[in-house]
Length: 344
Image 1 (tube, rainbow, N blue to C red):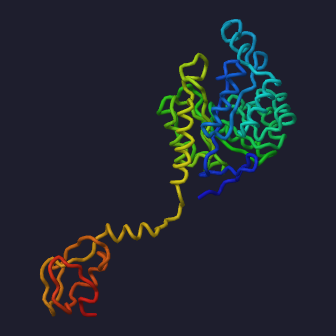
Image 2 (spheres, rainbow, N blue to C red):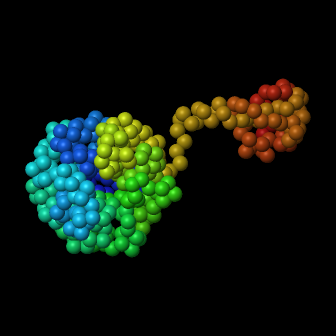
Image 3 (cartoon, rainbow, N blue to C red):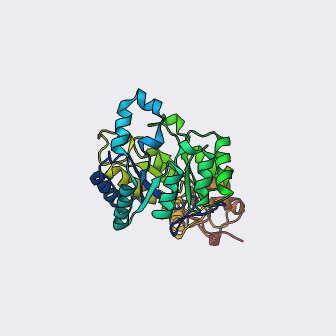
């Protein structure tokens, strides 16, 4: 069933239908507070997430001057909520202490160099806004680190071009189906795109979720998503950009726990009948039962038979072989008919 390439995050294999790698996207939910950022890391670890992820944007590298002239509040927020390299280094150390993977979405080539060459991150996450940023994709791919690429905002042709650009240089690529609306309309989530991306590109495919609760992340796991990325907060009512569409501690715990259960439940593509199934089959299936008293020497007719539990006698699909045979003994109405009860 799984013919795709396998990606590695550290020593962990990531492929379709594997136990999902859960990214707690802290993003800007630290609101500029290192104390809060570190607490979010600890809580993400407590919830069972595999990675605590940040973003490296700043006022200088995200918007042009004209945007700030129209929106001073945005400019102020970016000033207050951005993290510099010293802070990100400190947060990586916190992640190492808590034994959770540190990750951060780069916005510039300089960020990529810093995260790979200085912090030695396990993977690079590319935001969907850079899906068509070919020079940037080429630079990330050249670093020979596993790449997770969000596909939100992208057409099929744009995704195809991005995949081609990256895989010419780097084969360790994971795609994330993503709807970059916060929150998305339910009928726009299109989880079937997970199947499409998997089939078209033969790559591991996950899901970046911006819905207010974990419903569709869990549905994505049932479709074999190998990575789940969800925004993470301590309080969904906190002021800030993404808190309302984030998972809180209990929500993330729920996502991690149920993701594991769902993944285990997927089982095998091949049909398997377990010993417990066989025992249950004997209890639940029907066998051939005498519908009337049948005397020794009588020929058995179809109307002489009925079908009742348990399934330990002659199975229903063998009744044609029974019709017309003579009984070897008196058979009591309501009793199971055995092959020994009739002539060969």
